[in-house]
Every structure is written in C-alpha cells, then in structure tokens.
Length: 170
Image (cartoon, rainbow, N blue to C red):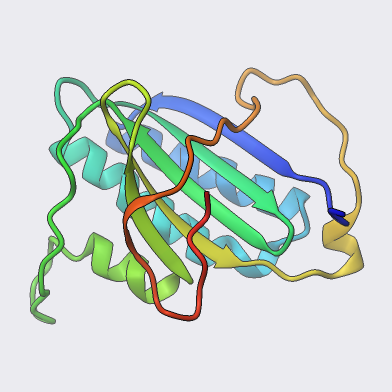
C-alpha cells in the first residue's frame, strides 16, 4: 500500500539562458509548496546543470521538458530533450570552469542516470532523498496550470550512474 500520494510537475521550454532562471524559480516554488524546502538548493542546482547541457549541446533544437516527481520518499528531477546523443561522462579537473555539470549532479544527488526518450531523444535524471514529515505528506490542490501535467514514466533507466546505496527509479 502506498501511504503517500504521488506529486508531479511538468514544464516545457526552450532551454535558453533566460528561461533556465525561470525554471529554477518554478522548481523552487513547487518544492516550497510541497514543504520540501530542504531540497531546493540541490534540485535547483541539478536542474540548472541539466538545462545548461541542453542549451549547449542538444540538437536539432533546445526544446525540452522538465519533470519533477515526488513518490514516497524520493524526488526525481528529469530533463527530456530530442537529441539522442548521450552525455559524455569524464573525469573532471578541479580547476576546470566548464564541463563539470554531471560531476556536480553526481555529488549532490542520491543517484542519476540517462535513459532513451520515447521520441528518440534522451532523459537525464537525478534523485534526491525527500523527508517524510507530516507537512510534506499533506494533500495539495490541483490548479490546472498548463505548466503542470502528469508525469509519464518510461520504464527503467539505462546507463544509470548510481551509488550502490540507491535504487534506480523506474
């Protein structure tokens, strides 16, 4: 039996620098609304890094979808773009000023990975451990905003880069 409701938020955007800041604010506001204030910094950093990668690397365009989902005690943030090329994971020199996004995500998240998208693109995701306080469990109203829609899962992750202590979301 599931003791907590699933919560989700979806935002579609073109990953331009001006939009990345807007999405950070949307994610932060949504997490405050869900009483997950302790996850805001990590989630905002992670979504910024993923959207920056879409802006810098995705082809043929910069259109993407950001999904945040809270299920039980796990918050999953994912970014889906139309580019099928997988991100290059490499060793990072501490003095480098760019190319450290995935290393940052690995450092602040419980787990992360990449899976193929339904349309031939890819989904890069990360998870954070969510608190299970009574305030975080309270039901919330639906506003019907175009920015919020049901999260559609696409199955188990492929190529997950997760510490041994975590389970891969599916």
